[in-house]
Image (cartoon, rainbow over all chains, first blue to last red; front, side, top):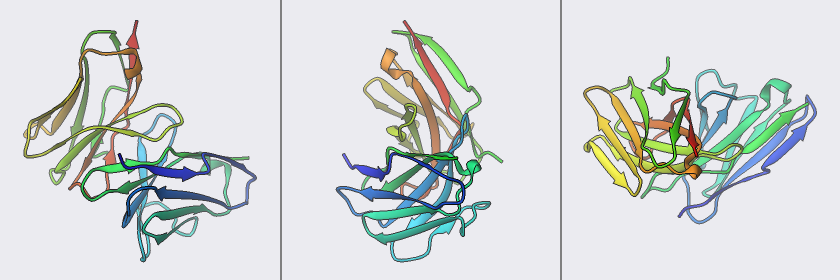
Length: 114
Length: 112
């Protein structure tokens, strides 16, 4: 089946620094990728839709200047958490569409901001 | 306002018995429904889906039932196995290629 990878799987950073998370579709081209965030005991919250070659579409309440998304190619989307703070600590998950099938999710990235 | 609701945060079922996970939705534009399974610190794994033109879809031990008039779907797992212990997310989408809206999840415990 389709595979989506994320890197890194785990990152710890100091408050005020920026962190980049990569999402790759390994065996298919994804014109659209989605970024989700999971809070403890809560659902997966859609943050933004990443479209190859164009600007990302952000969900209401998500700061686009804080969560920068770049979909540079058909197999890679990046999420950069800028000036991270402890409240940004979370589990970030990406997913990618394979047009003939359903969405496939990456393994997730655990971000801890000290 | 939650568009996809899983009202039971947790469920315990004896091994070998049937597990039934429920989900309700409010948006009548949803046309495609999915169930995902998630282990701690991992991304969700797709389990089974159903299109609104069907009322049942079966795949091995997993069966999803859709009641459009009630805006309700359920996932049946039979027989339940220890490896089924996980968090199960119900999700909905206007179509296969659009964004997915998730419920809050139900933690399933399979008891020995």
